[in-house]
Amino acid sequence: MTKRQHHIEAYFQNGLRLHRTGRLPEAEQVYREVLAASPSHADSLHMLGVIAMQCGQPQAALDC
Image (cartoon, rainbow, N blue to C red; front, side, top):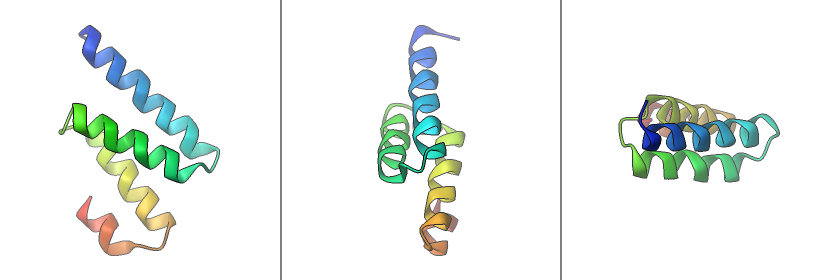
């Protein structure tokens, strides 16, 4: 894993921590920032879908 990949993964893990504590808007922002840095980051896409479902937005979840 490159240094850049390590930083992206560490930032993603921060998003997961926020998500687990119910801080959904902040977690969503982290996931979007991860995707800006690494557009193919599948876990971030998945977690955005999870947040969309938790917020009652099934179409947005499907889009993820």
